[in-house]
View 1 (cartoon, rainbow, N blue to C red):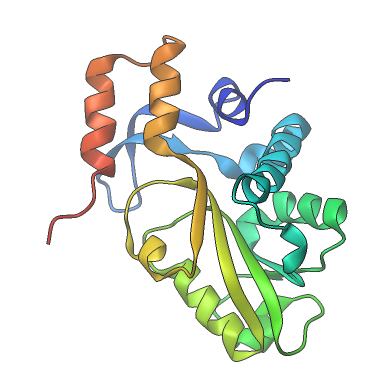
View 2 (cartoon, one colour; view 1 turned 45 degrees about the vertical axis):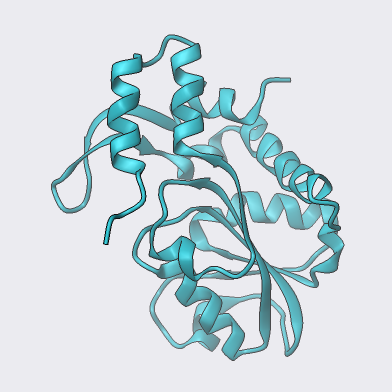
Length: 196
């Protein structure tokens, strides 16, 4: 079975090059994680990585009573939920009140795993965590599949972990001849922690 990182690069779910972001700035990579739904083997590999993550840190995924995710992570979160039997709550991301935005069965004081594809850099995951807490979903751990840099989202999450950093995906892409060492420097420059 191919590794999660190998599948991401092979199927173009992580691409390296010059891409314009929403602000018209150029970035050296593009994440197409919403395409995962079209690749069952990638979803299965991602779900396996979730379970491995908790084994690696000698924790049980069953310490959580709910899984919480943003809409873009719904396919993976659904698979993890069905494999573990942990109920899922997801955010529609509509900006409505938390009670209207969150979909799923929940009440107060559920230890909750926040599962996300990636940090967005705009504080959205931290806000989701805060909003969920207001209705009783106590995010005790946040797990992000791919971290891009040390952005606001990452700093605000409680007890967080990651599977992959974009830098490790770039190193993998070098080993497969997808990008050059010189291009890796562009990726590192982009993902470096902000200097204040």
